Length: 162
Figure (tube, rainbow, N blue to C red):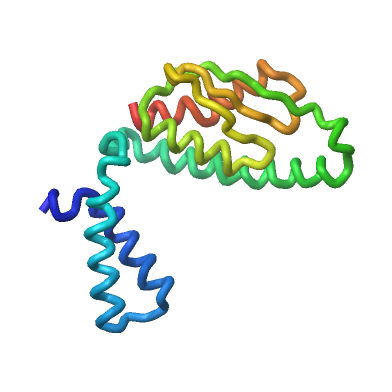
């Protein structure tokens, strides 16, 4: 069974997404959705670095709430800054964040969180995966930004994945 469905959750999500995109439950749509749900995870299995093991599900919920609040806050803050200030007056900078997180899945989630949050962009991860280069639109205190980033995102991800 594991060979047929290497990632059952991904297969189920693909199948449901296929049905939603097609807005149909006809036999042909169901059959093609089932085929895609089996074939795509099998073909992409080598792209997934390691099996995901979530160690603390309660921390996942707390992190989701934190990220949702931060995405909203950052979106409003970035929008306001762009509407009310000149681009040259924004204190943007590249910030090097030392990382303790080493799990590939955790790093992938950290990349998604970073890119979802307005005003930040994942610029580069060092080859040894120990330093993350972020571009941040508004940097007033670099040390405080690094501390907050590690506390709000890296620590919970380490609890979840490591």
